[in-house]
Length: 160
Length: 202
Image 1 (tube, helix red, strand yellow):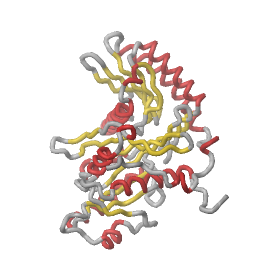
Image 2 (tube, chains in turn purple, blue):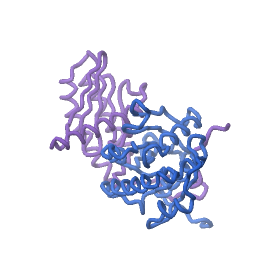
Image 3 (cartoon, chains in turn red, yellow):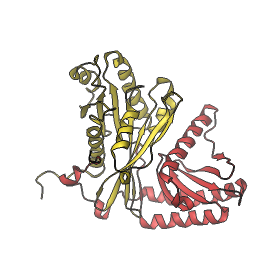
C-alpha cells in the first residue's frame, strides 16, 4: 500500500494559510503538519527554528504507538496526545489516516483552546490532503525517467 | 511512502534497516552519521533501553545529491530486533520506500536471521508490500568474526526469494560495506520512483 503524496505550490500555500490561522487562533508557539510515516509536511510559527525533522519522527512514533495502545484496549484510536511540560506543552491530534497535527504552546494559551482550534484546522487540512493525494505524482521537470548519470547519484561520504 | 514537495523542492523517502537483534542495524546508522558532512545529515535519535538495545527505533535523516533541482532526502530508520518487539517493528515500517535486511553472519545466528526475514515479509504484507517488489537489499554483517557462515550459504538461505537482490558483505562497526549498502538501496528507491532511461537511448 503506497500512500504517496505530492504537494504542489498551490497546496502548500493553502496548507500554510490553515496552519497560520491555527497558530494565531490557538495562540500556539509553533504548529506542524506531519505525515504519519514521520515526515514533516508543513509548519508555522517558531517551528522554523526547531529541529522539526526530529520532532516529526518522534511525534509520529509516539502517536502511532498510542494508536496501537488504543487498539489493544478495543478503541480505534486515541485522537489526541497531550504532553504537559513546565514551560511548554505538546498537543498532537489526528488529521486523517495519514497525517497528524502538532502544536507546541506555553502559558499564553490553554490545552482547551488548542484542542478547539486543532479540530477546525484538521478539517481544513484533511480536505486539502485528500485533493493532493488524487493529483498526478510527477509533472514538469520530474516527469521524465532518470538518466543513467542521475541513476548513479549517491550519498557521499566525507573524505577521510 | 515518497513525498514530493514542489513548493520546498524536496523529495522524501523512508528507508528501514531490518534484521534480528544485535545484527548491527544501529551500527550502520552510527557509521553513516559519523561519516557524512554536517550539511548532509540531521541529528541521530536513538530510542534505546538502558543497555543500548533499540527499544523503538533509531532515526537519521540524510540528504543525497539533488535530482533536477529537487533535494532528495532519505529518512533512515532501524527497528528493534528482539522478537518480542514486533508491534513496534510494524509501526516503524509504515510508509517504507526501501528496506535493508541486516543479517548476522555467525553460524549460531542463522535461525534468528531466517525468523526475522520471515517476520519482515509478514509485516510488509500488512502494508500490502512485498519483498519481491519493494526496493530491498541484504547485508551480511560481522564478516570479521571467526565463526561466520560462508557467503554462498547465507545467499542460499536468505536471498533466494522470487528475485535475487543485491547483497553486501559488511563490518558495520568499521564501516565496511555500509555505504555500498545504503547507496544501492537508495538508487533502487529512486529508480522505482522515476524509472530510468535505457542506456544508449537518445
